[in-house]
Amino acid sequence: MKKVYYLKTCDTCRRILKELNLPSEFKLQDIKSDAITVNQLEDMNERAGSYEALFSKRSQLYKKMGLKDQNLTEKDFKHYILEHYTFLKRPVIIIDDTIFIGNSKKTIEEVKAALI
Image (cartoon, rainbow, N blue to C red; front, side, top):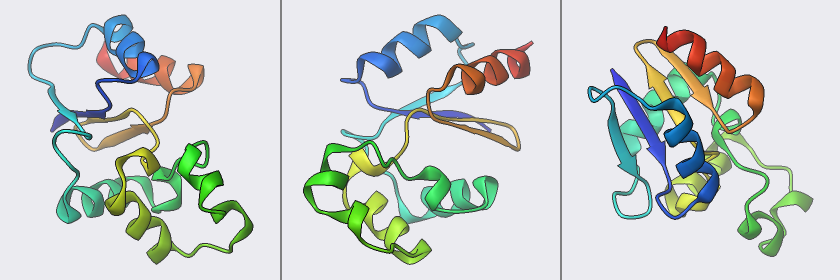
């Protein structure tokens, strides 16, 4: 599987996709217009090892809802990611059995290496 979960309106996601210049076999899913399904999230969780790894603590809603002051469980992380797309750390790039989460320089360099 070659897939990217991203947000079309996110400048960072757009910049990364342009920088990566992914081959046409990659399926792109804009998580705002095409919401993540339970099965997709469970697949990402299996690859990542936890829902927390997929959860964005930078989301404005995370602060607005006071979630940073709560002790969230894996069940909570899953619930919030499914409830609102901004809780997914973006982009999520899946190349075969490997998952790359987020937009750190290190992560993007790892994606580039995997594409060679």
